[in-house]
Image (cartoon, rainbow over all chains, first blue to last red):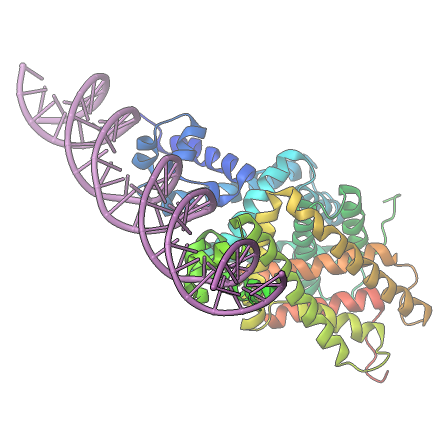
Length: 204
Length: 204
DNA sequence: TCTTTTGCATTGCAGTTGCAACGTAACCAA
DNA sequence: TTGGTTACGTTGCAACTGCAATGCAAAAGA
């Protein structure tokens, strides 16, 4: 019945253009026409795939998170089987930091959406589950390290997981603002992992 | 020669209105007319005190930072003379977290400006010094605690200071997004202080 | 073949935006 | 008093906004 067009693909094409605009000029520069031009399509087509601007924004927000999720999944898969909790956590968190231009672009968009959702609580609800899942995973890894005897058992895994995610988020913000250099951020993250999991032992 | 009007006061009046608009609807809702209405003045007057919108935004950004600086100064002053590094740091960082509605409003504005400056690097430059100063202060307090023997000397004060600020920033972001409860954030912050300065001893 | 659905482009519109221009009233120095 | 400066208020405008409406070609079913 349809004209054999992949809806999801078109929507992603548009969302990608939106993210490019947002990464360069901020979310306030995102308009139907602007996005359409960036995507190289007519503004009528954008309207065809998103009935309202808000619908487009919400979809783009979900794409942003798919992006970072895919990034992490890929990096973790490259670690091979059964990496140590420390390696796993470091890989994950480093991957989420805006350290190169590609991730900086994504980070700027994510930051813009963060401010966007802070004012639209209904849109933000979907993100809570994601954070909760990530949190549980990190806490689980810390528990694993503790069980293996490499980590100090006096640290509370849940609290430490909250702190670890917060430090990643905070470092990301400071990196985007240009306040810290990548080296500084990486050193701080490594130091935090040392604090939580115990000092690193090169001869693991 | 002037008509005896305090320029700075008028500008702050307008900036306050801007912050109210931004806290409620985001920075994208900030327009000359909107701000003027919120401030209860004519849009012509806003234009009289700010020749361009960008000038208004930049000024408001500086007011936001004066706000949080004043907040911290007041809270620290209330501690009396020579508070312990731990108390001082905790007070400072807690004061910067969006834990009540007043600070949440400020936090939303700060977050919006964070995204704003991330796309306008020239405006962001002024903030670097502030972060650097804060960082040096925190590192100094950690060094003090180490010298007093209460803190583990194996932790690097500079790295730990970066981490502490980042964790504060990250917790703030998650709090604004509603991902964490104030209790969770406070517990995570306390745990981090324990990690950096050593476990708290009630009978100090 | 005819009809219906889908994909997309164009046009139009009411509302909003930043900003310039102009007006006027109050004040101050001469 | 005169002239100049300051402090606004009002109006206007070109550009842009989201969105509805309309048109039309291609494809799929009848």
